[in-house]
Length: 315
Image (tube, rainbow, N blue to C red; front, side, top):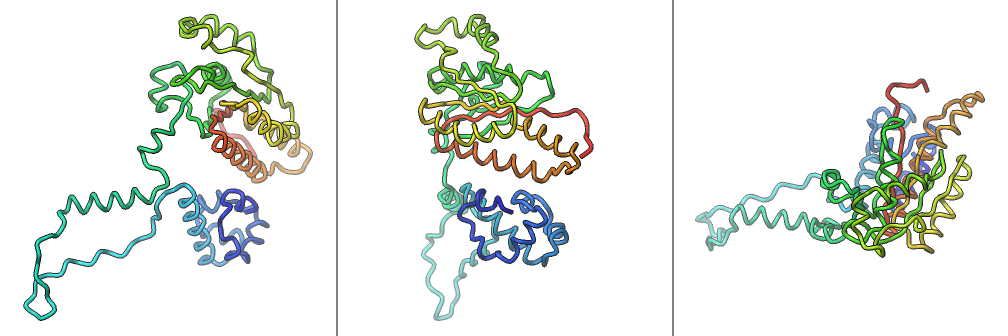
């Protein structure tokens, strides 16, 4: 629960202050409140079920308000139209009742006006980085969106890094294929393959058809390697924001997002300290919130890769 003020800064946490210590003691996070059953949370933290339900509902409503989603709370049914009566209080029927279609349209317009963004406003804000694959771009709504965090997952050798290298070049293209901005690449496993990037630049016919002034350049790609979790935290939290401001970065890539966390907690597990999956998940949530904040604040695209395994592992 220590991440509640970070996930929802304006949440009225004081109303539930007596619940927080028990939730912290049992490592219950904000994501747990949104995904787990209230009964399971209450049993795990030894808290009254009604209080837990109220907290879960308040967190969900606060998240909806933060995202601009209208509240899903039930509304009272509309009053039925007054029928014509012969009594003294019955007024004449002027015949100006709205048609059902008009009433539905008015209700839809009122609901849409409560949203922070509408489809029309979002379409004007939607800037993407092309993957240079028309079918994939079409499936993604134009490409990789700026202002958002995108996760690319797959097994080892599936081609995740190759896909990310393509984005490092595409982001430099002028709209609508790119953002016309440089890229920042952070690797947690191997240094950036500049040789492969040079091959892609020389072999891709799309780049060859461009004027020389519009072609991507390796000089507009900044890269670094973070061999451990300590250096990764320092670079992501302190150096990356400075580089984004200084160079006008349009694409931030973290390849891969969980490698250092996995290695760090595996070392702790082998030392007899337990795998502590909850702590690892909390750190990843914290990183995700930081990356989302960078993406929204600077209108850049953040892309992270993550390796998946074909089977289950013991924890």
